[in-house]
Length: 465
Ligand code: PMP
Image (tube, rainbow, N blue to C red; front, side, top):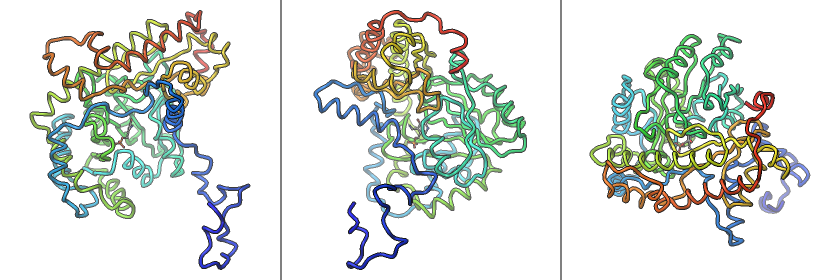
Protein backbone atom coordinates (compact mmCIF):
# COMPACT_ATOMS: atom_id res chain seq x y z
CA UNK A 1 0.00 0.00 0.00
CA UNK A 2 1.46 3.36 -0.95
CA UNK A 3 1.60 6.21 1.54
CA UNK A 4 -0.80 8.18 -0.62
CA UNK A 5 -3.51 5.72 0.27
CA UNK A 6 -3.46 7.18 3.76
CA UNK A 7 -3.88 10.80 2.63
CA UNK A 8 -7.15 12.65 2.29
CA UNK A 9 -7.57 15.50 -0.19
CA UNK A 10 -3.82 15.81 -0.60
CA UNK A 11 -3.41 17.29 2.90
CA UNK A 12 -0.73 15.64 5.06
CA UNK A 13 -2.13 13.63 7.94
CA UNK A 14 -1.18 14.52 11.50
CA UNK A 15 1.85 12.64 12.83
CA UNK A 16 -0.25 10.21 14.87
CA UNK A 17 -1.86 8.97 11.64
CA UNK A 18 1.44 8.37 9.89
CA UNK A 19 1.36 4.99 8.24
CA UNK A 20 3.77 2.48 9.73
CA UNK A 21 7.12 2.69 7.98
CA UNK A 22 8.61 -0.25 6.14
CA UNK A 23 10.98 -1.04 9.01
CA UNK A 24 8.14 -1.37 11.54
CA UNK A 25 5.14 -2.54 9.51
CA UNK A 26 3.16 -3.97 12.42
CA UNK A 27 3.77 -1.24 14.96
CA UNK A 28 0.08 -0.28 15.06
CA UNK A 29 -1.18 -3.83 15.45
CA UNK A 30 -2.78 -5.00 18.67
CA UNK A 31 -0.01 -6.68 20.67
CA UNK A 32 -2.06 -9.86 20.98
CA UNK A 33 -2.11 -10.22 17.21
CA UNK A 34 1.35 -8.96 16.39
CA UNK A 35 3.61 -11.70 15.07
CA UNK A 36 0.77 -14.22 14.76
CA UNK A 37 1.31 -16.46 11.75
CA UNK A 38 -1.45 -17.56 9.39
CA UNK A 39 -2.80 -20.98 10.30
CA UNK A 40 -0.74 -24.03 9.35
CA UNK A 41 -3.62 -25.25 7.23
CA UNK A 42 -3.35 -22.19 5.02
CA UNK A 43 0.41 -22.56 4.70
CA UNK A 44 0.08 -26.20 3.67
CA UNK A 45 -2.62 -25.24 1.17
CA UNK A 46 -0.29 -22.72 -0.40
CA UNK A 47 2.43 -25.35 -0.73
CA UNK A 48 -0.12 -27.67 -2.36
CA UNK A 49 -1.11 -24.96 -4.85
CA UNK A 50 2.52 -24.38 -5.77
CA UNK A 51 3.14 -28.10 -6.34
CA UNK A 52 -0.01 -28.41 -8.44
CA UNK A 53 1.06 -25.45 -10.56
CA UNK A 54 4.29 -27.36 -11.17
CA UNK A 55 2.19 -30.24 -12.48
CA UNK A 56 2.64 -32.46 -9.42
CA UNK A 57 -0.15 -34.64 -8.09
CA UNK A 58 -1.19 -33.58 -4.59
CA UNK A 59 -3.22 -35.56 -2.06
CA UNK A 60 -5.04 -33.07 0.13
CA UNK A 61 -5.11 -34.63 3.57
CA UNK A 62 -4.43 -31.27 5.24
CA UNK A 63 -7.76 -29.50 5.39
CA UNK A 64 -10.40 -31.08 7.66
CA UNK A 65 -13.47 -30.59 5.52
CA UNK A 66 -16.34 -33.07 5.32
CA UNK A 67 -16.24 -34.98 2.03
CA UNK A 68 -20.02 -35.55 2.07
CA UNK A 69 -22.65 -33.37 0.42
CA UNK A 70 -25.27 -31.60 2.52
CA UNK A 71 -28.34 -33.90 2.65
CA UNK A 72 -30.80 -32.99 -0.10
CA UNK A 73 -33.76 -32.12 2.20
CA UNK A 74 -31.53 -29.62 4.03
CA UNK A 75 -30.41 -28.09 0.71
CA UNK A 76 -34.08 -27.92 -0.34
CA UNK A 77 -34.92 -26.14 2.92
CA UNK A 78 -32.21 -23.60 2.09
CA UNK A 79 -33.65 -23.10 -1.42
CA UNK A 80 -37.11 -22.65 0.07
CA UNK A 81 -35.82 -19.98 2.44
CA UNK A 82 -33.47 -18.12 0.12
CA UNK A 83 -35.88 -15.17 0.21
CA UNK A 84 -35.66 -14.75 3.99
CA UNK A 85 -33.82 -11.50 4.32
CA UNK A 86 -34.71 -10.23 7.76
CA UNK A 87 -32.34 -9.93 10.68
CA UNK A 88 -33.14 -12.74 13.07
CA UNK A 89 -32.90 -12.54 16.87
CA UNK A 90 -29.31 -12.35 18.07
CA UNK A 91 -29.63 -15.62 20.00
CA UNK A 92 -31.01 -17.37 16.96
CA UNK A 93 -34.28 -18.31 15.29
CA UNK A 94 -36.70 -19.56 17.95
CA UNK A 95 -37.68 -22.64 15.90
CA UNK A 96 -34.00 -23.54 15.47
CA UNK A 97 -33.23 -23.12 19.15
CA UNK A 98 -36.20 -25.39 19.89
CA UNK A 99 -34.92 -27.94 17.37
CA UNK A 100 -31.38 -27.85 18.80
CA UNK A 101 -32.62 -28.25 22.38
CA UNK A 102 -34.85 -31.17 21.35
CA UNK A 103 -31.91 -32.70 19.46
CA UNK A 104 -29.74 -32.59 22.59
CA UNK A 105 -32.52 -34.00 24.75
CA UNK A 106 -32.81 -36.89 22.27
CA UNK A 107 -29.10 -37.46 21.72
CA UNK A 108 -27.54 -36.72 25.11
CA UNK A 109 -30.44 -37.04 27.51
CA UNK A 110 -29.85 -33.54 28.92
CA UNK A 111 -32.85 -31.44 29.92
CA UNK A 112 -31.99 -28.39 27.83
CA UNK A 113 -34.53 -25.90 26.52
CA UNK A 114 -34.56 -23.40 23.66
CA UNK A 115 -33.64 -20.64 26.10
CA UNK A 116 -30.38 -22.50 26.82
CA UNK A 117 -29.29 -22.42 23.16
CA UNK A 118 -27.23 -19.83 21.31
CA UNK A 119 -26.85 -19.96 17.52
CA UNK A 120 -23.79 -18.44 15.88
CA UNK A 121 -21.98 -18.23 12.54
CA UNK A 122 -19.93 -21.37 13.22
CA UNK A 123 -19.04 -22.91 16.57
CA UNK A 124 -15.59 -21.35 16.20
CA UNK A 125 -17.10 -17.89 16.54
CA UNK A 126 -19.09 -18.97 19.59
CA UNK A 127 -15.90 -20.27 21.20
CA UNK A 128 -14.30 -16.91 20.59
CA UNK A 129 -17.26 -15.12 22.19
CA UNK A 130 -17.15 -17.44 25.18
CA UNK A 131 -13.50 -16.68 25.80
CA UNK A 132 -14.15 -13.00 25.29
CA UNK A 133 -16.84 -12.82 27.97
CA UNK A 134 -15.52 -15.32 30.52
CA UNK A 135 -12.66 -14.15 32.63
CA UNK A 136 -10.67 -17.30 33.33
CA UNK A 137 -7.91 -19.59 32.09
CA UNK A 138 -8.37 -21.82 29.08
CA UNK A 139 -7.23 -25.36 29.78
CA UNK A 140 -6.41 -27.36 26.66
CA UNK A 141 -5.11 -30.90 26.38
CA UNK A 142 -2.46 -31.42 23.71
CA UNK A 143 -2.88 -32.41 20.97
CA UNK A 144 -5.92 -30.24 20.29
CA UNK A 145 -7.62 -28.48 17.41
CA UNK A 146 -5.57 -25.61 16.01
CA UNK A 147 -7.77 -22.62 16.91
CA UNK A 148 -8.47 -22.81 20.67
CA UNK A 149 -5.11 -21.42 21.75
CA UNK A 150 -4.79 -18.67 19.09
CA UNK A 151 -8.27 -17.45 20.06
CA UNK A 152 -7.19 -17.26 23.70
CA UNK A 153 -4.02 -15.42 22.70
CA UNK A 154 -5.93 -12.90 20.59
CA UNK A 155 -8.26 -12.14 23.50
CA UNK A 156 -5.44 -12.15 26.03
CA UNK A 157 -6.53 -15.18 28.05
CA UNK A 158 -4.04 -17.38 29.83
CA UNK A 159 -3.67 -20.85 28.26
CA UNK A 160 -2.76 -23.86 30.37
CA UNK A 161 -1.78 -26.87 28.29
CA UNK A 162 -2.16 -30.35 29.73
CA UNK A 163 0.12 -32.88 28.16
CA UNK A 164 -1.17 -36.27 27.05
CA UNK A 165 0.72 -39.36 25.90
CA UNK A 166 0.49 -41.53 22.83
CA UNK A 167 0.47 -44.51 25.22
CA UNK A 168 -2.96 -43.26 26.44
CA UNK A 169 -4.15 -42.61 22.89
CA UNK A 170 -3.53 -38.90 23.52
CA UNK A 171 -6.45 -38.65 25.95
CA UNK A 172 -6.65 -36.26 28.88
CA UNK A 173 -6.14 -38.18 32.11
CA UNK A 174 -8.40 -37.27 35.05
CA UNK A 175 -5.36 -37.24 37.39
CA UNK A 176 -3.62 -34.65 35.25
CA UNK A 177 -6.70 -32.44 35.24
CA UNK A 178 -6.96 -32.89 39.00
CA UNK A 179 -3.30 -31.90 39.47
CA UNK A 180 -3.71 -28.73 37.46
CA UNK A 181 -6.95 -27.70 39.21
CA UNK A 182 -5.60 -28.52 42.68
CA UNK A 183 -2.61 -26.23 42.11
CA UNK A 184 -4.99 -23.25 42.40
CA UNK A 185 -8.42 -24.61 43.29
CA UNK A 186 -10.41 -21.38 43.22
CA UNK A 187 -9.22 -20.21 39.83
CA UNK A 188 -11.92 -19.82 37.13
CA UNK A 189 -11.27 -22.12 34.22
CA UNK A 190 -12.73 -23.40 30.99
CA UNK A 191 -11.56 -26.90 30.12
CA UNK A 192 -11.90 -27.77 26.45
CA UNK A 193 -12.73 -31.37 25.71
CA UNK A 194 -13.11 -32.40 22.08
CA UNK A 195 -14.31 -35.89 21.23
CA UNK A 196 -14.34 -37.58 18.79
CA UNK A 197 -11.10 -35.77 18.56
CA UNK A 198 -9.43 -33.59 16.02
CA UNK A 199 -6.56 -34.49 15.41
CA UNK A 200 -6.41 -38.02 16.87
CA UNK A 201 -9.71 -39.58 15.73
CA UNK A 202 -10.13 -41.03 19.19
CA UNK A 203 -12.85 -40.55 21.78
CA UNK A 204 -13.50 -41.08 25.50
CA UNK A 205 -15.29 -44.06 26.99
CA UNK A 206 -18.28 -43.63 29.31
CA UNK A 207 -16.08 -44.37 32.29
CA UNK A 208 -13.45 -41.81 31.25
CA UNK A 209 -16.10 -39.12 30.76
CA UNK A 210 -17.52 -39.91 34.17
CA UNK A 211 -14.10 -39.57 35.81
CA UNK A 212 -13.30 -36.32 34.04
CA UNK A 213 -16.76 -35.03 34.97
CA UNK A 214 -16.09 -35.79 38.64
CA UNK A 215 -12.87 -33.75 38.63
CA UNK A 216 -14.58 -30.89 36.79
CA UNK A 217 -17.40 -30.88 39.34
CA UNK A 218 -14.95 -30.92 42.28
CA UNK A 219 -13.28 -27.73 41.01
CA UNK A 220 -16.42 -26.19 39.46
CA UNK A 221 -14.73 -25.68 36.12
CA UNK A 222 -16.74 -25.04 32.99
CA UNK A 223 -16.33 -27.82 30.45
CA UNK A 224 -16.54 -26.66 26.86
CA UNK A 225 -17.51 -29.95 25.29
CA UNK A 226 -16.68 -29.66 21.61
CA UNK A 227 -18.85 -32.37 20.08
CA UNK A 228 -18.73 -31.17 16.50
CA UNK A 229 -17.75 -34.72 15.40
CA UNK A 230 -20.24 -36.44 17.75
CA UNK A 231 -22.60 -37.57 15.01
CA UNK A 232 -19.77 -39.12 13.05
CA UNK A 233 -18.65 -41.42 15.82
CA UNK A 234 -18.07 -44.40 13.56
CA UNK A 235 -20.43 -46.68 15.49
CA UNK A 236 -22.99 -43.93 16.13
CA UNK A 237 -22.22 -44.37 19.85
CA UNK A 238 -21.23 -40.86 20.90
CA UNK A 239 -21.83 -40.01 24.57
CA UNK A 240 -21.59 -36.47 25.95
CA UNK A 241 -19.85 -35.59 29.20
CA UNK A 242 -23.03 -33.57 29.87
CA UNK A 243 -24.54 -36.89 30.91
CA UNK A 244 -22.15 -36.95 33.89
CA UNK A 245 -21.59 -33.25 34.53
CA UNK A 246 -24.74 -31.56 33.23
CA UNK A 247 -24.51 -28.50 35.46
CA UNK A 248 -21.10 -27.39 34.15
CA UNK A 249 -21.03 -28.54 30.52
CA UNK A 250 -21.54 -26.36 27.48
CA UNK A 251 -22.14 -28.55 24.44
CA UNK A 252 -20.78 -27.15 21.21
CA UNK A 253 -21.82 -28.50 17.83
CA UNK A 254 -22.94 -27.29 14.40
CA UNK A 255 -23.60 -28.24 10.80
CA UNK A 256 -19.99 -28.32 9.63
CA UNK A 257 -19.03 -31.95 10.08
CA UNK A 258 -22.01 -34.30 10.35
CA UNK A 259 -24.10 -32.30 7.87
CA UNK A 260 -21.26 -31.56 5.45
CA UNK A 261 -21.97 -27.82 5.61
CA UNK A 262 -18.79 -26.17 6.92
CA UNK A 263 -19.11 -23.27 4.51
CA UNK A 264 -22.66 -22.52 5.60
CA UNK A 265 -21.27 -21.32 8.92
CA UNK A 266 -23.68 -22.38 11.58
CA UNK A 267 -22.73 -23.45 15.09
CA UNK A 268 -24.63 -23.96 18.32
CA UNK A 269 -23.88 -23.73 22.04
CA UNK A 270 -26.19 -25.39 24.53
CA UNK A 271 -25.73 -24.42 28.17
CA UNK A 272 -26.99 -25.59 31.52
CA UNK A 273 -29.69 -23.28 32.85
CA UNK A 274 -27.61 -21.67 35.58
CA UNK A 275 -24.96 -20.59 33.04
CA UNK A 276 -27.61 -18.45 31.33
CA UNK A 277 -25.65 -15.34 32.33
CA UNK A 278 -22.81 -16.50 30.08
CA UNK A 279 -25.09 -16.91 27.07
CA UNK A 280 -26.55 -13.51 27.89
CA UNK A 281 -23.10 -11.87 27.83
CA UNK A 282 -22.16 -13.70 24.63
CA UNK A 283 -25.38 -12.46 23.00
CA UNK A 284 -24.47 -8.89 23.95
CA UNK A 285 -21.10 -9.16 22.19
CA UNK A 286 -22.76 -10.92 19.25
CA UNK A 287 -25.27 -8.08 18.94
CA UNK A 288 -22.42 -5.58 18.69
CA UNK A 289 -20.43 -7.59 16.16
CA UNK A 290 -22.19 -9.97 13.73
CA UNK A 291 -25.79 -9.11 14.79
CA UNK A 292 -27.24 -12.51 13.93
CA UNK A 293 -26.52 -15.62 11.91
CA UNK A 294 -27.63 -15.74 8.26
CA UNK A 295 -31.42 -16.14 8.09
CA UNK A 296 -31.74 -18.69 5.23
CA UNK A 297 -29.07 -20.90 6.83
CA UNK A 298 -30.92 -20.88 10.16
CA UNK A 299 -34.20 -21.88 8.53
CA UNK A 300 -32.44 -24.72 6.70
CA UNK A 301 -30.70 -25.81 9.90
CA UNK A 302 -34.10 -26.48 11.51
CA UNK A 303 -34.55 -29.31 8.99
CA UNK A 304 -31.09 -30.68 9.82
CA UNK A 305 -31.57 -30.66 13.60
CA UNK A 306 -35.14 -31.97 13.48
CA UNK A 307 -33.78 -34.91 11.54
CA UNK A 308 -36.47 -36.90 9.79
CA UNK A 309 -36.28 -40.08 7.73
CA UNK A 310 -33.40 -38.90 5.53
CA UNK A 311 -30.90 -38.27 8.31
CA UNK A 312 -30.66 -41.86 9.61
CA UNK A 313 -29.47 -43.41 6.32
CA UNK A 314 -27.26 -40.38 5.57
CA UNK A 315 -25.44 -40.64 8.89
CA UNK A 316 -25.31 -44.43 8.82
CA UNK A 317 -23.71 -44.44 5.36
CA UNK A 318 -21.30 -41.59 6.19
CA UNK A 319 -20.17 -43.49 9.29
CA UNK A 320 -19.74 -46.74 7.36
CA UNK A 321 -17.45 -45.10 4.83
CA UNK A 322 -15.44 -43.22 7.48
CA UNK A 323 -15.13 -46.29 9.72
CA UNK A 324 -13.84 -48.51 6.92
CA UNK A 325 -11.52 -45.87 5.51
CA UNK A 326 -10.15 -44.88 8.93
CA UNK A 327 -9.44 -48.53 9.72
CA UNK A 328 -7.76 -49.01 6.35
CA UNK A 329 -5.52 -45.93 6.76
CA UNK A 330 -4.50 -46.94 10.28
CA UNK A 331 -3.74 -50.51 9.19
CA UNK A 332 -1.58 -49.45 6.23
CA UNK A 333 0.44 -46.99 8.32
CA UNK A 334 0.83 -49.41 11.20
CA UNK A 335 1.96 -52.05 8.73
CA UNK A 336 4.67 -49.63 7.64
CA UNK A 337 5.86 -49.14 11.23
CA UNK A 338 4.00 -46.05 12.51
CA UNK A 339 2.17 -45.85 15.84
CA UNK A 340 -1.33 -44.46 16.08
CA UNK A 341 -4.59 -45.00 17.94
CA UNK A 342 -7.46 -46.71 16.17
CA UNK A 343 -9.71 -44.00 14.72
CA UNK A 344 -13.21 -44.30 16.18
CA UNK A 345 -14.83 -41.07 15.04
CA UNK A 346 -14.46 -38.09 12.71
CA UNK A 347 -12.03 -38.24 9.81
CA UNK A 348 -8.54 -37.82 11.20
CA UNK A 349 -5.57 -39.94 12.16
CA UNK A 350 -2.54 -38.75 14.08
CA UNK A 351 0.41 -41.05 13.35
CA UNK A 352 3.59 -40.88 15.34
CA UNK A 353 6.75 -41.17 13.22
CA UNK A 354 9.12 -41.60 16.17
CA UNK A 355 10.10 -45.13 15.17
CA UNK A 356 11.71 -43.50 12.11
CA UNK A 357 13.51 -40.82 14.07
CA UNK A 358 17.03 -41.89 13.06
CA UNK A 359 16.54 -42.23 9.31
CA UNK A 360 14.56 -38.99 9.32
CA UNK A 361 17.26 -37.21 11.27
CA UNK A 362 19.81 -38.48 8.76
CA UNK A 363 17.80 -36.62 6.10
CA UNK A 364 17.74 -33.46 8.19
CA UNK A 365 14.13 -33.95 9.35
CA UNK A 366 14.02 -33.08 13.06
CA UNK A 367 10.62 -31.43 13.53
CA UNK A 368 7.02 -32.17 12.66
CA UNK A 369 6.99 -29.15 10.33
CA UNK A 370 10.06 -30.43 8.47
CA UNK A 371 8.44 -33.86 8.33
CA UNK A 372 5.27 -32.36 6.85
CA UNK A 373 7.26 -30.48 4.19
CA UNK A 374 9.45 -33.45 3.36
CA UNK A 375 6.47 -35.80 3.00
CA UNK A 376 4.63 -33.33 0.79
CA UNK A 377 7.67 -32.72 -1.38
CA UNK A 378 8.54 -36.41 -1.80
CA UNK A 379 5.07 -38.02 -2.02
CA UNK A 380 2.59 -35.21 -2.72
CA UNK A 381 0.70 -36.07 0.49
CA UNK A 382 -0.37 -32.94 2.37
CA UNK A 383 -0.71 -33.17 6.17
CA UNK A 384 -0.59 -30.80 9.15
CA UNK A 385 2.34 -30.96 11.60
CA UNK A 386 1.76 -32.03 15.20
CA UNK A 387 3.24 -28.71 16.29
CA UNK A 388 0.07 -26.96 15.07
CA UNK A 389 -1.92 -29.01 17.59
CA UNK A 390 0.23 -27.96 20.53
CA UNK A 391 2.75 -30.80 20.41
CA UNK A 392 6.46 -30.10 20.91
CA UNK A 393 8.02 -29.07 17.56
CA UNK A 394 10.56 -31.88 17.67
CA UNK A 395 7.93 -34.58 18.14
CA UNK A 396 7.40 -36.34 14.85
CA UNK A 397 3.60 -36.40 14.69
CA UNK A 398 1.28 -35.40 11.84
CA UNK A 399 -2.44 -35.11 11.30
CA UNK A 400 -3.93 -36.67 8.22
CA UNK A 401 -7.54 -35.92 7.23
CA UNK A 402 -8.81 -38.84 5.15
CA UNK A 403 -11.28 -36.73 3.23
CA UNK A 404 -9.83 -36.43 -0.28
CA UNK A 405 -12.62 -38.34 -2.04
CA UNK A 406 -16.01 -37.76 -3.65
CA UNK A 407 -18.32 -38.22 -0.66
CA UNK A 408 -21.51 -38.07 -2.75
CA UNK A 409 -20.39 -40.93 -5.00
CA UNK A 410 -19.20 -42.92 -1.96
CA UNK A 411 -22.59 -42.51 -0.23
CA UNK A 412 -24.43 -43.65 -3.38
CA UNK A 413 -22.16 -46.67 -3.71
CA UNK A 414 -22.50 -47.72 -0.10
CA UNK A 415 -26.29 -47.31 -0.19
CA UNK A 416 -26.42 -49.56 -3.27
CA UNK A 417 -24.45 -52.26 -1.45
CA UNK A 418 -27.03 -52.75 1.28
CA UNK A 419 -26.58 -52.61 5.03
CA UNK A 420 -25.12 -56.05 5.58
CA UNK A 421 -22.20 -55.85 3.16
CA UNK A 422 -18.85 -54.99 4.71
CA UNK A 423 -16.77 -52.33 2.97
CA UNK A 424 -13.60 -54.10 1.91
CA UNK A 425 -10.37 -52.66 0.58
CA UNK A 426 -11.57 -53.10 -3.00
CA UNK A 427 -14.50 -50.76 -2.29
CA UNK A 428 -12.21 -48.19 -0.69
CA UNK A 429 -9.68 -48.35 -3.51
CA UNK A 430 -12.47 -47.71 -6.02
CA UNK A 431 -14.43 -45.09 -4.09
CA UNK A 432 -11.69 -43.33 -2.14
CA UNK A 433 -8.71 -43.94 -4.45
CA UNK A 434 -6.82 -40.78 -3.59
CA UNK A 435 -6.83 -41.58 0.11
CA UNK A 436 -5.76 -45.19 -0.35
CA UNK A 437 -3.07 -44.09 -2.83
CA UNK A 438 -1.86 -41.47 -0.35
CA UNK A 439 -1.51 -44.13 2.37
CA UNK A 440 0.41 -46.41 -0.01
CA UNK A 441 2.73 -43.55 -0.91
CA UNK A 442 3.44 -42.76 2.75
CA UNK A 443 4.05 -46.45 3.47
CA UNK A 444 6.42 -46.78 0.52
CA UNK A 445 8.23 -43.60 1.52
CA UNK A 446 8.77 -45.03 4.99
CA UNK A 447 10.02 -48.31 3.61
CA UNK A 448 12.48 -46.45 1.44
CA UNK A 449 13.74 -44.56 4.49
CA UNK A 450 15.29 -47.76 5.71
CA UNK A 451 15.77 -49.19 9.16
CA UNK A 452 13.52 -48.12 11.94
CA UNK A 453 14.23 -47.91 15.66
CA UNK A 454 11.85 -50.63 16.77
CA UNK A 455 11.39 -49.07 20.18
CA UNK A 456 11.93 -45.41 20.95
CA UNK A 457 14.04 -45.13 24.07
CA UNK A 458 12.41 -44.22 27.37
CA UNK A 459 14.10 -40.87 27.70
CA UNK A 460 12.85 -39.79 24.31
CA UNK A 461 9.30 -40.86 25.14
CA UNK A 462 9.49 -38.66 28.24
CA UNK A 463 10.83 -35.70 26.32
CA UNK A 464 8.03 -35.62 23.87
CA UNK A 465 4.96 -37.17 25.43
N1 PMP B 1 -13.93 -27.72 16.74
C1 PMP B 1 -13.19 -28.59 16.05
C2 PMP B 1 -12.51 -29.68 16.78
C3 PMP B 1 -13.05 -28.46 14.66
O1 PMP B 1 -12.31 -29.34 13.99
C4 PMP B 1 -13.70 -27.38 14.00
C5 PMP B 1 -13.58 -27.16 12.51
N2 PMP B 1 -12.51 -27.67 11.89
C6 PMP B 1 -14.45 -26.50 14.77
C7 PMP B 1 -14.55 -26.70 16.13
C8 PMP B 1 -15.14 -25.30 14.16
O2 PMP B 1 -16.24 -25.66 13.43
P1 PMP B 1 -17.27 -24.58 12.85
O3 PMP B 1 -16.80 -23.22 13.21
O4 PMP B 1 -17.29 -24.82 11.40
O5 PMP B 1 -18.58 -24.89 13.55
